[in-house]
Image (cartoon, rainbow, N blue to C red; front, side, top):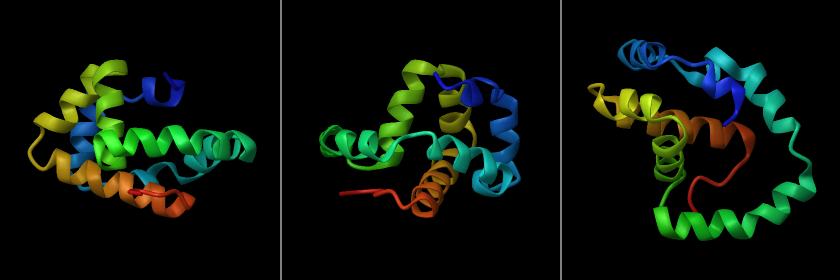
Length: 106
């Protein structure tokens, strides 16, 4: 798991949900830096796998939630159990995908 995600505590996520904080606004430079580390050829090579995953999960949000449920169950739980959490997380994933020029749904 990415160390940046590992460093986020469930109570921080719950607070961000309650306060409707934007993950992009909180971590724009970190998100951009992590995205810039991925070489374009790797991104292009991964697109078929991403399309396959989206065909199975439907949206990037569902895909990320499935990943979190396996790799960081505490964060997943904080998102799905906090009132308004799933909707908030969907907005965050959509915003980050859009800002990075990634497809949310194919």
